Length: 65
Image (cartoon, rainbow, N blue to C red; front, side, top):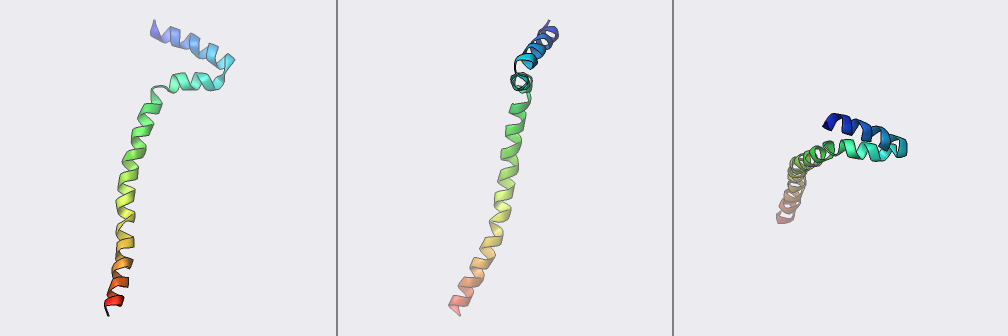
């Protein structure tokens, strides 16, 4: 019963608004995409932090001299 109902809605939405149809069908996909973004962001931040720390230490050493 669910598959046929969704199929009919798909055609109706596509005829009225192709974008709307995608949103309804993609309802299951969107939630899976957001979680992936945050997971990739955290690892990138720490990797970028270490590099800047090195140059800062070099500058401090020169000042001490």
